[in-house]
Length: 65
Image 1 (cartoon, one colour):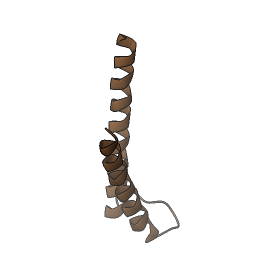
Image 2 (cartoon, rainbow, N blue to C red; image 1 turned 90 degrees about the vertical axis):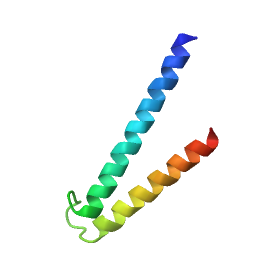
Image 3 (cartoon, one colour; image 1 turned 180 degrees about the vertical axis):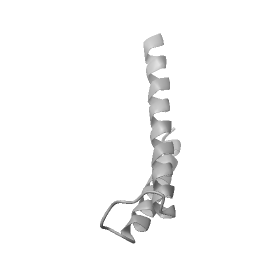
């Protein structure tokens, strides 16, 4: 029983870490802090795609609860 509870906590921590990293990358792409070489303005678009899909994923995950 304890093993399942620990697994749920670990899964949540891994999910939350992924959300935070995704948002950090998305905002960094938009701000120009990081970029993918040779794609120029598409970096900003990619940043917005990352942010929007991350937020949608969080909303869907919360609705599933």
